[in-house]
Amino acid sequence: MAFTAAQRRILAALAIAGALVAAPAIASAPAQEPDISGVWNRYPPYPGTFSGQPDPAELQVVPPPLRAPYLAQWQAMEQRRAAADAAGKPLPTPSSQCLPEGVPGIMGAHYALQILQNPALRQVTVLAEFMSQVRRIYLDEALPPVEAINPGYFGRSVGRWEGGVLVVETAGVREDVRYEDIPHSPAMHVEERLHLRADGILADDVTITDPQYLTAPYRFTFLYKREPASYRIEEYVCDGDRTVVGTDGSLEMKTEPTP
Image (cartoon, rainbow, N blue to C red; front, side, top):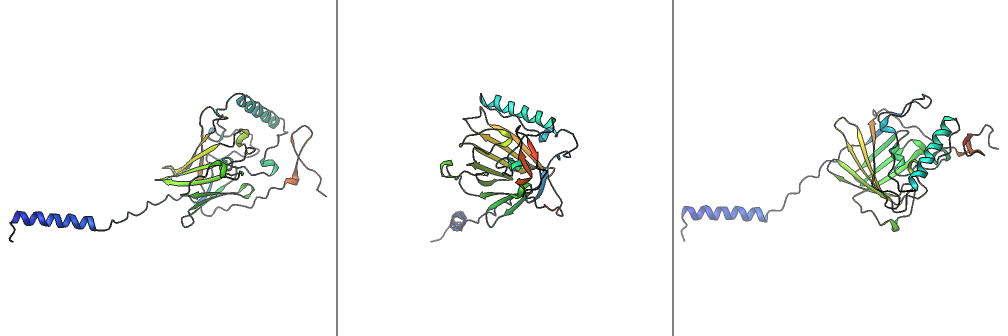
């Protein structure tokens, strides 16, 4: 059977279309995950310990949207701490008693943080110089129900990349772990969105939700500047024998060696 030129063109087009349908799809290359590894310090930097200068606005605590009566209680504690600091008799904190900062406190980075990325393990690890703390963020895993998480200082953190943003969800933080004295329930959920800005600054946008204690999501941002590759984190061991809570509730340094 002879085909006209028009029929041959139609058959050729159909053959090409069939080949395209039958050909296996070529998987697109996975997007390159941004490199946030390295050593980071808060930005702008904290003033010197004995400088007498206030922290820059970017480092100051954002007041939380706490429900009544928790807001008044938190404000009273902040006033007590400020008065005690001014009198040279600071009140004890979990950190001064050698307890981990937890989440999100560890990201406050009073000392340097080191971030390790391991694509093979699908894990991001945060190492804090302060008290040698370790936080693990497991990538591409579902966050278990809070009832299935063994409560801990850092809870359970899972993450995923959404383009250039590392989205981290955390639950299961112990109730006695209070970021800046802020109370929370076992149902507290912490979401972080870590991303590199155009100027190279790493931003960690934090959103905390806890309907029992908060009237609205609590939002704030940590900023960090990457240190040179030559920067070295030092060992930081917290020696709890050096401090004691005095009879007036303030923190005191021991002047005599422990027998």
